[in-house]
Image 1 (cartoon, rainbow over the protein chains, first blue to last red):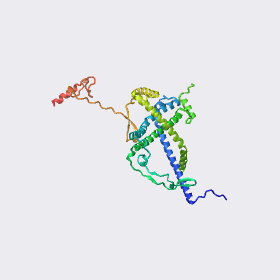
Image 2: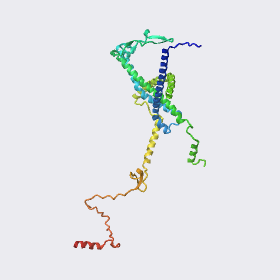
Image 3: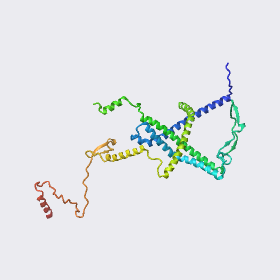
Image 4: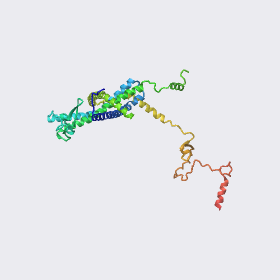
Length: 222
Length: 157
């Protein structure tokens, strides 16, 4: 008779089943987010078309290498025009913190502090280092209960420089990452278009197309 | 159900490729910051020299030349209008063939009445004073004497 190494109680089986459902739902949500990201990247990539349209349609760009070189230059120009505002916002946030520290001569000013001077004053802070909150299950250290709360959101006038720094870096950072995503999206689009426009492909060709062209041209051999 | 399973497997694929995508994003971000700093310094220097950072690329200059050449040719083609044939006008007649276009003959407009002038209040065309021929008159003689007799008879009455 085979003996199982692990003996599971009914409660453990229910917990495992619930964890499995949560895992499946999590991956489904990640799949939806991935598809949404793909759609956004496709739309961002199509923005390069209006900048290279004229040069391609008027026949000024003759081959794939020239197309990629020209389109990449346009791509990075668009990136510079779009990215300077978020980067300036980040620089303003960093400069605010540096100027505050220089004026108060307090270089130990903690931006992440949760009591007086940091951005932690805006968030709930729990004591995850409390040993009573942890237990060991199957040799793995997991949470037994929710840790105790040590700080609730509150306003602190001393932390004004941290607030400005946090807002500027968050807004500027997210905005900048979106522009970086745009660069990557346009680069992908450029390589796809270079293949479709300048590479000879016979996917949509039928042998009668050549015959029709010869009839219209009145057979050049005559 | 099928789409949920597809999303589930795509989710696993995105989860596994996420670190690589994040690395690519981080690399391009760092390159972008250096690119911005380099071009920003160049832009400031060019600004004080009175120059622009992003000059037209050679391809853009060629595009502009081709467009200008096309713009010169297009207005000449527009002036050559096709004349109407036999003065036919196409109109949509709602009472015939449920609105399909029907050929109608263009009716010639009556000649315009000239404005009255001080010297010629009755609008008599002094250059054209040919008499109106009567039906009973002799064609050979332009002026009919019988008409004069008729006028005398009317006066005597």
